[in-house]
Length: 127
Image (cartoon, rainbow, N blue to C red; front, side, top):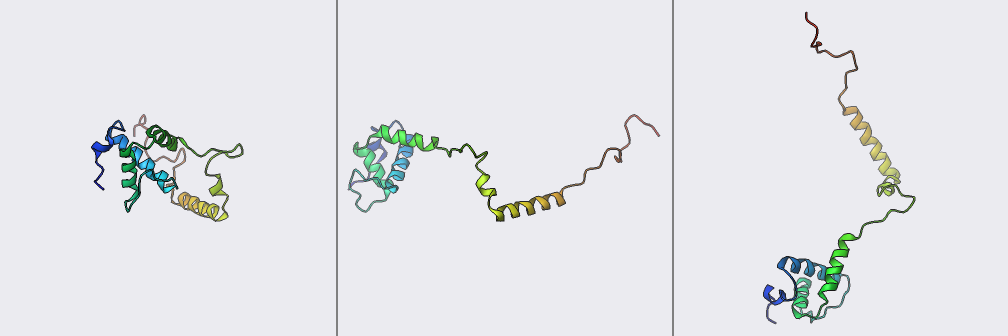
């Protein structure tokens, strides 16, 4: 089979940049179990995705939608969760490591002079 070139796919997409985005989304779909709309032969999934786009058999608008939605999906917090880090702090070993780290940081912290112990002379006083 002849190689698929950018010029084969550009009638179906708006730019080479979009071609890259859509092809990457289609590869993720194929990795997830989607059936190819062209013969796979012995090609890698990237080549299959480009051949599918060039064939015009894919619904490009659906691939665009999937691509956009893949970046909109974010983990949702339940009503009882304050942050996404709660699950990590529930592990006793992680809490122990966190406590050790905090102790070490406190030990290494520079000592701040209390008020009145300042060694610098006041700017208004003369000797």
